[in-house]
Every structure is written in structure tokens, then in C-alpha cells.
Length: 547
Image 1 (spheres, one colour):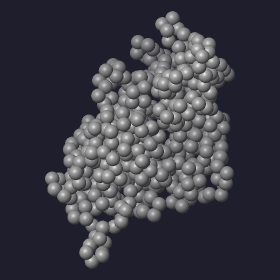
Image 2 (cartoon, one colour; image 1 turned 90 degrees about the vertical axis):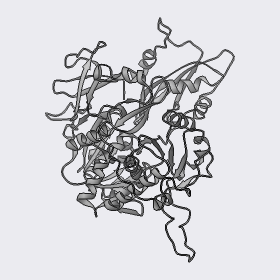
Image 3 (spheres, rainbow, N blue to C red; image 1 turned 180 degrees about the vertical axis):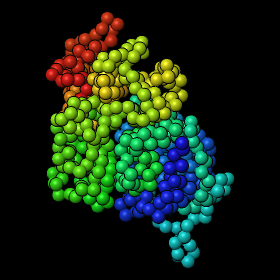
Image 4 (tube, rainbow, N blue to C red; image 1 turned 60 degrees about the horizontal axis):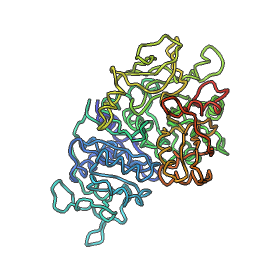
């Protein structure tokens, strides 16, 4: 089970088939494989060795797909970075995993002076078009000379700033194709960063076995026999989309790219390229089906949408089925730590009437290669219908957290991954999530950890105490809400506190609303803020304490 095996199979069975569509660029599987081998050769010439990390900060593109395969082809480990993070957060991740090489696209060039503070970086590659084609003395276009490891003509190591940035297309054209390193099994394929209750990011180490088995499990549930035309609507740095990088390649389908989700551009891409499949979070589905003029686009090619990250409100599900009558919907539940699939709710259960009704409120049944149990505080399995923590084990479960052995041991104690989610299992094996052990907020499909927001708020001189919770939101599922107690004699407005947070953390993590007062927050006997009491008024009348 190695990622590159799927690419080689695609070339074997569909060499002339269309592999990628990115705006005006179209490449066959044979062309894509050649570019992957050349990019791998360029990375090795820049000093990449087995197990070295290569980070990527970019919007969706065909070059992102090439990165996903060229890095393991060269023997390295991918490290996709969240484009929504603030520069200091990205630097912390770079310092933690210590990649030698960083790739960025044009949208993030302005961050390079800050990102170059990461001591491990030796080279930065701009994943864009070259500023001008190379020329010979006669004025004809030509490729630069080939580069090889140890070649004295190689650029000097990256030492900061943006002056030494290499161009993706130029180094690829100059490189000698590298042989596949054939990383497989328990070799680490990627490090995907997720938040943590401590506020420090955790690098989830996923192996080649993890990512390939996850893709195969999902395809067993969704694939109907014909290669897909898959539209990358979700961000490619996110594990929810990354699984389809592998899944669509295994079947030698076609990858279609838009830089980032936009309802109109998504509908245009579906119509123009006859897209058959895509993956979204419910907020994206909601924006898509309620887009003004959605009925004017031909979406008849769309066969299935895989969604996850948060539950789909029944009203949104009904609207989506009306807008896309020939499309199936599959709900996935998982975590970065599980590559990500744990369960899947089949399309046939997306009904409100009949014998299959009632399951739409669940996250489905365990996928192939995964086991699930509901346990009490002592990890004893509970009877069906009893609420407890959801734990899982199987081929999708991570190797561990990068450089965090204690947190790894805690998460994987007893050989089972402890998800931190609370739910129950019915008699048919469907999992229903009702709450979280952690205080994590899921807003628009993004995990937000309150302690990060609280840390930012506490840096404001007027803030004496604060607590951050998730409250219901029709748009985002949950919205970040802060309760702030001000220092004696100090003042601060809601807008001021929100703007203050934006200087320290990513915009999507910042509070959307703030309650400001001077009364102490409710505390436990151990001195902990009782967030459950703070949440309770907002969730009255709700069947479950997440949205």
C-alpha cells in the first residue's frame, strides 16, 4: 500500500486519459506521471533525503496534485499547510516539523519574509508560472540545463527573504526524472496538522497504509464502477479533500481544480467539465444550493457529493436533493487522526419518511477496515443506545503525533483511538454523535479550539477573564462566541476585541460575537470555568449539544 502505486496504475490502464484540468491546462496521466518524476528529481537535487518533509502553502491546483505524488516519489513526507492560518501559526508548524523545502503559490509570496524565520528551511519554491520562458542565444525558447544532485550550478541554500525563491516550472523542466522511491506500508506519507486542547498544533503522522486503505474503503462504499470527474472544491490541505487525491487517482479518473470554493465558480466547473463527484462541508452545500441562479446551470452530470465536518441540517439536505435530483449524498464522519474516515452514511438513508427514515440524524456505520465502540470512562464497552465516548481502531488510524509521544500514548491507549466525541450506537450499528468531550468548536467544517482564542483575548490589556464556546449558527453550524470579564477600570468594545484577535490568530477562529461584563464566570470547586453552564442557554431546545 503505497501512494505512488495508484499513480503508476493510472498510467498503466489510462495513459492517454485526461488526468487534470486546471483552467487552460490539461494533462494526461502519462504527462502527469512524467512531471511527478521530474519534480521528484528536482527535489532530490535540492538535497531531499528519505523521510525529509516538504511543506506546501497554496490554493488548489494541478501543481498541488503533483506535489502530493512527487514528494513521496522522491522518498519525502508531505506537509500541507492550512491557508487560513496566521503567519505566526504557520511558523510554529514549520519549526515543529522542520521541513527543508517550502512550496508556495503566488497568493502567499507576501508571507515569505515571516515564514523564512523557520530555521530548517533551505529552499523555497514558487509554484507558479515562470516570469518568462528561458531563451537561447538565437532567441528560441528552450529548457534550462538539467540539474543533478551535487551540481555546482544549483542555487545556494535559502537563507531568508524572497530573493532566492526558485520557480517550480523552471526547476521541474531542468530536472532529471527520479526513480520511484517506492515508499509503502508503515512509511510516513504525510504530516497533517490539527489543533489540540492545549492550543499547540499537533502533527498527525499518516502512513502510506493509512491513506491508501482509507481511499479504498471509501471507494468500496461510493464507487459505482466508472472513473470519476472529481472537482476539488474543499481545500487540498485538508485531509477531507486529500483522501480524494488518492481515491480519484486510484481509479484513473480526472481531477478538476478551482483555487477555492465559490458557489458560482463551482457551478461553472460542474457544467463545463461535466463533473461527477465532489466533497464539501454542509456550509458549502448550503451556499451552493441557495446560490441565486443555481437553476440556470447544468448540473445533470453530478452523481455524488461526499460531505462531512459537521451534520447536514435536514432543511439543507432536502433543498440539495431538490436542486440536484440525480445526485446521491454520502455523509462521512472522521478525524485527521483516522485519514479521515470512521463511518459513512449511505445515500439511501437521506430520507425523512419510509422504513429507512431516522438514520439521517446519524453519521452512519463504520467503514471497511475500521471498528467502532462506545465506552465508559474506564474504556468498558457500553450497551447499544447508551451514551459514551466513541473509540475506533483499524487501518486508517494514525501512526501518532509528530514529536509528541505522551499525547500519542494517551490518544491510542489500549490500541484504540479515543476520538473525544460522545455518542451512542443503535441496534443497527449507526453512530449518533451528541456532544464532545473536548471543548472543540466546529464552524464551517473547521476545527476551532477555544484555548487558542482565549489566549488571544487574554493578550488584550482590558481582559481579566474569558471563556470561548460554540453556539448554534444557521450559516456555520456553530459560531465562536466569547464571554469576557473586563479588568476593573478598563473598557473594551466587542468590535475592538474581535479585531484584536485577528492580529494573533486566523480570521475563522476569531469570535463572531462577544458578551462583555464584569461578573465572575461560573467556576468549579477545582477552579475550572464551567463552560457547560455557559453553553446551556444557547442550546435550550436543541436535541444535541452540537449543531
